[in-house]
Image (cartoon, rainbow, N blue to C red; front, top):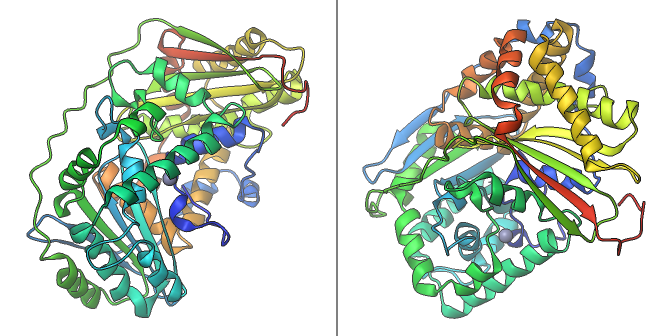
Length: 476
Ligand SMILES: [Zn+2]
């Protein structure tokens, strides 16, 4: 998971409703994301199995008001990344309030009783640092990377907006318009921009993953200042927050700062999360969309278990085998061999609650969704019936290993991993043990999860047909 903020872009206006989802949309509009890790594929077979990553030492503290802090000292560069994870995302939104978590992310930059709008980011930028935030289905994350000497400033700023946020009717209405524009730009006016949203609406019947983090225009319009304030009082409280710090500090001094700035913030009421579980799907669902796109497309979503569960690890490896790189199975079959697709991939959206594993393809002119679906099914069927050769599984493990290594080179990616392990998977020590779970996966595990999850009764399929208004064959 990563966010790249260009210097031209005002940082507060950029957020990621869901990294996996964003990647999917990027791929569907033809921007294949090239892995940086191709060199690792040259590792000899089983190289991954011999690798041990350096142990990460985590200092942790819990304040009387319930705030958790996790600290990792890294002294390679004189910088610190601070992340504040609020355990609230779009799955905490009630019907009629979709988009609230993300809207609220924006409001957190609009001033406090101590600071005016934008002053937060000005302090960070003036220090030579950068800051931003993102909202997913499960969490809202605010981060700053600053020179080590400015760690107290970053912590003071975060504590200030946790305690003293001030939302005026004016800033509320402004941000609501900003979010609506974000929706138009990134979803409503992008080719295939709404397909994932529509797929979720049909794949989930009771669980709030039914709606995606950007929310609906109607709900955003309906949102009132009072509702938004109550959202803050409920979720933006120390007992629902985890502060993650990675970088160049001494842990004892940083812990003293956390106490100094956060200890006086009053604890909020205990959180009640009554999120309904999605019942098992019993039959395939198919939805057809006609829209202004140049080429037909198919996306299939299979229900799968939550991140961190035993089956999540073989499923992540299955995704690599199916679609990481041009020798992967789905890409090879649909793009190279059959030449029926411009792009074809798979990816799991691994989240706190069970989510979807996607297989999708953007087709070449002259091919129908049904043809692509038959090929997809044939590739999945092969995975259900035959063990994956050791060399292919080793290659997938090497790719995972490469991601672990690259992610540990920067303070922010490391803080992201630690925050996600702590808040979403509820076990910060996974930073030291999760790789083992991947390396332990066997060909039989892959076959087993394929049989269990990649079956038609468990699948929602969306077929996208061009309406004929877009120039044919432009290929985006
Ligand atoms: Zn946003």
